[in-house]
Length: 422
Image (tube, rainbow, N blue to C red; front, side, top):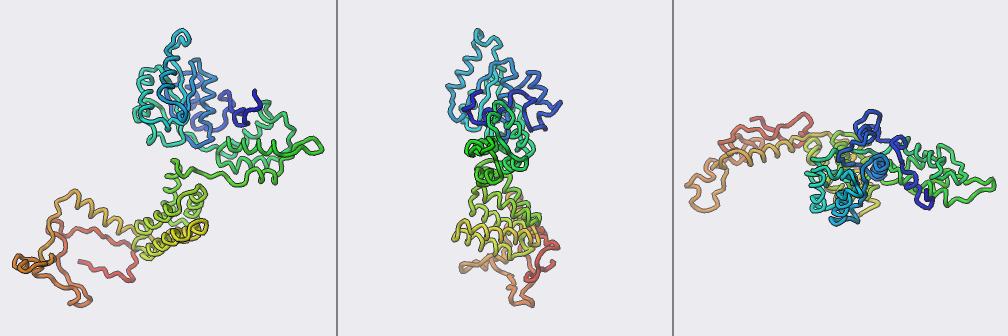
């Protein structure tokens, strides 16, 4: 093993037994484990966050399979590289099986033309494709390729998973065994904790700590909590603001406000801000939530949210975090009503899909002389001329007369709202 290579590279597993994590697809008797061990793999897409083991799994497969294994990176490869791989595969003198396992890292970076170039060979079985991606393949990968592959979602590694790999790296010949290292288990776990599921980050941080800490008089490198803190200044961002997790986090943020959970609301807000999310994007989501989910349960929520959005625009980060938190928590703590949301959606559905008739003549304006002779405005009752400034008359067209769009619920704030039952 070349010890000049990064520790994360040196510690990549060679066999399934060395692979740590992803038990939901690689545990005993799980289909992916069985197919790898039997070397009966079909085309697969590995989808998961950085550092969860996608490339490591491909390396395990390359050490297991009897087929020719070719690796490409979508960032640096193109159609010509795909054709070259196919040419190598179809050379029966060099590759008697006539098949290859083609691993394409970051396959989402291939454009449609490049992905289409793979299709015929995946279709006829010449290529067993392993695509790795951090992005949602159902959005980023050609649907034809998806239909010919099994998609396996890999999860962030747990703290225990990463601790296991770190512990192994201290003892492995290809790891850090050549160094005499003293480190408490609790300190080692801190390296695992701050990596947020990314084992590559954890190994890189540990290696930096070892290589930059001087040897003490007893001949050992002492990795203390203070050393760990110096080597890992901040906890790794939980997600990439431009990645698929962006949608998961913003969905959780919105649903937490809707579900009246202020703690979850501010947690997902913090995750978004830590990942570099645009504060104005978050402010707009709070405004939408104030209208859609709080609604007339607390009409003031929209005023607060809109004021917050203007303040965020004027103030900017880092102080904008306080404004966003105030507005988001206000939404979460407000009484909820989606009656107006349902009302406009129902009305739009009718307008788009039904014959809804015409505006009644008596509520049309007679904007020119002679129009009243045609019935415009005739019979209109001016509500302010009647007690309580209300009078019963028809407003909806005849075709949908009696239709209820706005159905107030028990959470409506009626302190300044006059509701007339017709």
